[in-house]
Amino acid sequence: MTEALASEEMSSDEAAAAASSCGREFRANPYPVYATLRATAPVCPLSPPHGVETYLITRYDDARAALADPRLSKDMYGAIDAYQRIFGDSSIALDDNMLFSDPPKHTRLRRIVGSTFTPKRVESLRPRVQEITEELLDRCSTSGPVDLLPEFCFPLPLVVICELLGVPENERKQAHAWSSTVARTGFGPEARKALEVAEGNLRDYLVDLIARKRQEPDSGLLSALVTAQDQDGALTDHELVSTAWVLLFAGHKSTAYQIGNAVHHLLAQPEQKRLALQSAGSMNSASEEIFRFETSVENSTFRYAKEDVVIRDTLIPKGALVQISIAAANRDPEAFTDPNRMDVKRPNVQADHLTFGVGPHYCIGAPLARLEMQIALTTLFERYPDMALAEAPEDSRWLTVPFPAFRGLAELPVLLDPS
Image (cartoon, rainbow, N blue to C red):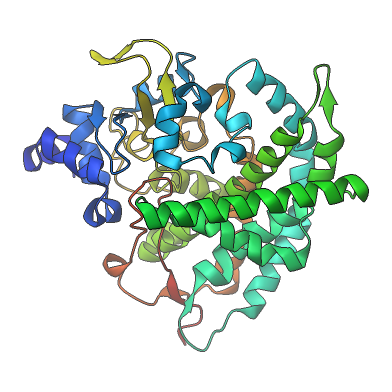
């Protein structure tokens, strides 16, 4: 759908209403709405179900600039009233980390975490990621349809991040269950209660795990973070818990959904799959195009305006919450030719897509996500070259939680060996 066609078929008010309500139809396919907003209201005020008005940015140039704009703060303590109305009190204790902070605090936290979560440490994981991938595929049934999300896409990054952090094997299932509750929770009293319970359990678990790492350090990243410090000192206990949480949660949810998105689209487009599998380099390039085409990170986390900010002639008033639609920006025709077509040979896409952000908050886990994505896809398709979707692509079910944190499938049934 072109921008012009989208704007003809849907009015700006209709698009804003759809994005505000986050209904099932919008969650299943948000791209026509995003196309209309890019064309008619690129900086659009929304009234989402959580009751806090936000401004949604959908054009690529605006999104790229906003992601690095110091006037748009990530420190949600500065917008605490709005934050509590959306997430309640339970989230605050888990959000004292580099993802939700500004310089100089962000600079300090990022420097400490970066000193332990290094590209060298990530690259050293390559043989183990390959081994885990093979082990998971060994367990998958080839006698009938298998849902790859719970059997492969989620366990792979979960096991990797848990091993990296030093989470004991017998404790990972429960940590995953609590994280899943957080990821899939919507709004309303029952959902809020479930969120509070899951986040409380996670916080208590991480406090206990960190205490154990102090008593019995190991070679894991969490033990390294316990002892790491810079010229300004070490992480506080509060920062340690929150940092462990964001690494655990962000370290597997987004990658799991991204692997699922990639498998889905490659199976739905056999010619693109063939091009992606021509060589290791081809799969690396294909992965970057899929990060652009169907990012699992639909929207950035909240920012708020520290002062009046004008973008595209729209005033975002001081104190207002701002969300940046990564999914919309990644399909902006002003930035990408024929953006609604997945083209695994698209040039320069790694440097251009916004899936990992830009500026000071560029995703510190990007190298690990890329490593896992490339190994998962290459190994899966090499082992099962005839793998097929177990249902028509148009019948696939996408997440419909009324809050676009993740863009991913609700299930991914495939036939690994159709013969």
